[in-house]
Length: 318
Image (cartoon, rainbow, N blue to C red; front, side, top):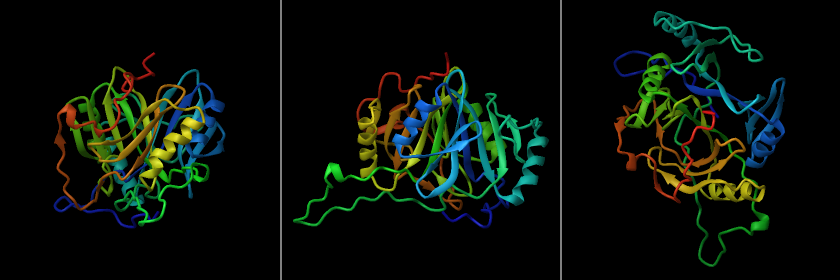
């Protein structure tokens, strides 16, 4: 994936000071072997890390996520990438707003800027290549011509392999405070929201409809990670692939309203989800996206099965 070589410019305000990508996430789980089995079945590459393991996608050597061992499942931190010319201005920007810079967590030492968000989550800003897409990634489906069978034999279906981390949805005590913090401190843009229930943010150097989203809960935590697949058929194939491996709980196949992506969520052993996602909306850096506050019925999904009763439950509340 080609990185943007120059920063985006706003029409009136000069250069954008904002993160360009979600660099990686870190989650603690109580059983690394069980977690590794889940992520391998999902189609991710598992590579060694001194504290646990990292996950990569097909044809991409970026460590999108790290899984470390803990007493229970717990969302630990997020790392965001910035362009090199923006790093020093970001430091001044954060300090001018009274944000206290912190040492990095043990095992994740870096030259980045570390601090806590409004919920006490550890956040890093670090110089990194842009991994968010530079253009709309269209979800394809090619129909067969007349007289030719379109579907492959199930025995010959290829293993679904996500190509990149698309976004992450985390729980927050206050959605409005989350929007304010990540827009003011990290320079992100509000894409859409539904009152104080859920909000979606994008990177203003060009990104998918949402790079990160927030849903209301009584405590912080991870709801799901979302992984892009190139064709719509792989959303359904991924669901079957996981069911064949014993991971049948989840939700889908369906299509979201906000973001427009086709989805299937697979529940992991600790109550959060990994999502196969295809054909999500894209917000270029030169487009003034109009963020709207949508009614609840217009903020979730346009078609699909009824979600599980506990789909929105935060299992890190225990």
